[in-house]
Image 1: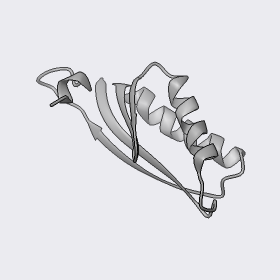
Image 2: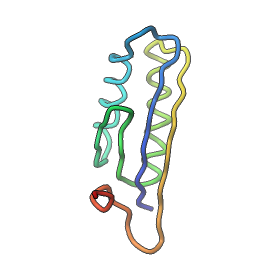
Image 3: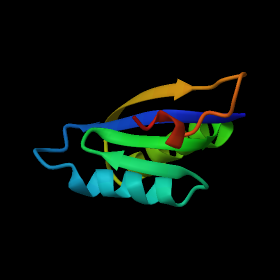
Image 4: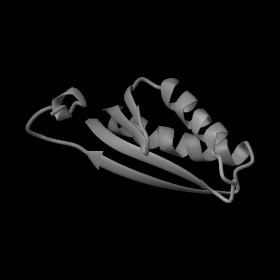
Length: 92
């Protein structure tokens, strides 16, 4: 099932800058079969629902393995039955 999503990953207790951790998130997202749009507060994702859910789990596993102690992610998902959801279809 195709889906669109918005993902925001927030490393907690990492200090003022989380550039390294967020760079790792973007790197992991780029390793998947997704259409991505990064923005100031997160990343919009288009892809298979199962793959989106799996990459969120992988992001948490990898950032914890890299030393992040606490992570909070906000994930908004959209699926549809009347048509295939796309990021291009969201453009105003």
